[in-house]
Length: 206
Image 1: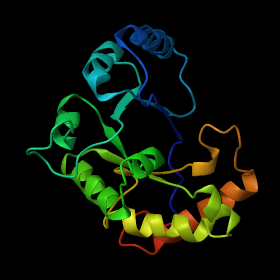
Image 2 (image 1 turned 180 degrees about the vertical axis):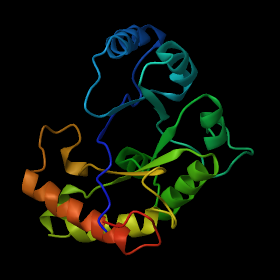
Image 3 (image 1 turned 135 degrees about the vertical axis):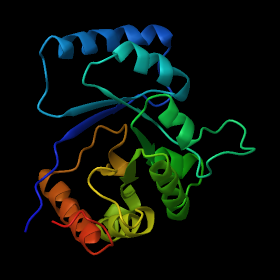
């Protein structure tokens, strides 16, 4: 029996941008949704860690989820400057991004580290948003599908479900360049994602 497609998710990653004053824009979004302007998708905002609690409190009961941009792979300990998944959950967040290409590039994060972070997210009962995507060099070498498939197999924990995992595909060469993947390219990658997940020990069969 084929599983139903999940509801689309639009997540806004603020990256290292925003101040407390920026939350005024969130007030407008929350008010619009509260007044009946409900989009045909789930909405999530992922601000820098210091803004998580303030954003969660200002959103209130509006149908907007709040997620973090990263978490540490350990639940606690002497890791100065890092944030645990448990704390993220305690702040009222429901998800955390792991494996973003900027983390992989700037901080040398490997698939094994991304997997460990996804497991930490699940221990805290957070949805892990696992990011995958190929570089321009990998695309030009015709390895895009191979790379993405390997990232999924190496970064996604066994036993995941549609309730605790989102796989976010964003080609690295498209970030901040103005270039975008064609619909055909995206469909080819989506097919590999589905095939990779279906071959794993998950309940996300398609």
